[in-house]
Length: 121
Image (cartoon, rainbow, N blue to C red; front, top):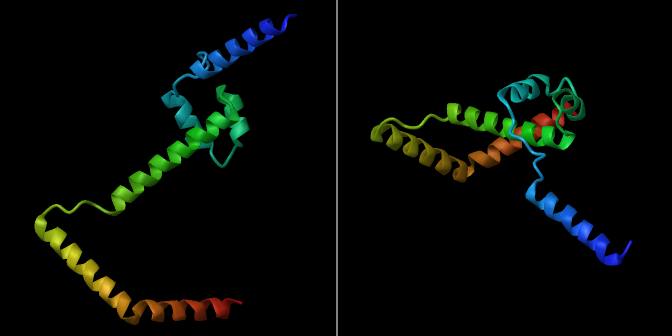
């Protein structure tokens, strides 16, 4: 085979790889549900086998699902203030907390934690 023909074939492969060549497909709700239900029970490779996805695809999707879950949990933990008064109260409480930590409370807490850790050893 001539050298120029091989390079033509290679460039065609590269072009198809760059364009995605149609191998990627959107995740279905059923696939996402299966991943959620089986994380920790099966390996990423096993999950991928069952749903026809690669190990890397399952890892990426599980990371995305975990990130979404953490974001929802954070949003639920810290509700948005509903009024200007509530916002002012929160700011005031945080300001007091910061002043207390600057005033030595943080150092006292660290010493206390170090003592607890030392007792466990």
